[in-house]
Length: 102
Figure (cartoon, rainbow, N blue to C red):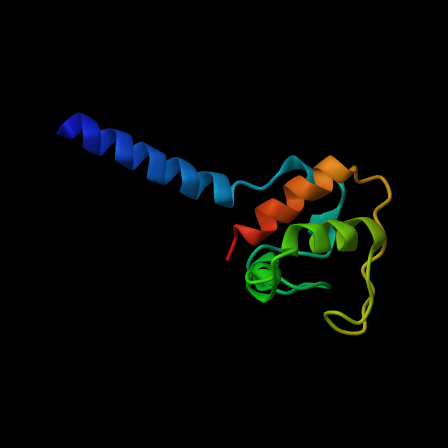
């Protein structure tokens, strides 16, 4: 019984840590210069983004497009510049991570 509990505890904690572990891309592509996980900076908090799009069926694809091409007017007057150096694969990793933050 203790073994089963240990396995379940490990699985639950691994999922919690994964959803809170920041992808390296968040730092290396300068996302963290304008965004924080829990508070608004220049751009919205990542948790606010997750909450806004949590029920959107195409949320990952939508966020990938915003990450790659940028946007203006979605979260206020400040534009998010396009990040053309972000690969499609890295953008997808970031989008999936953001949506797990809710």
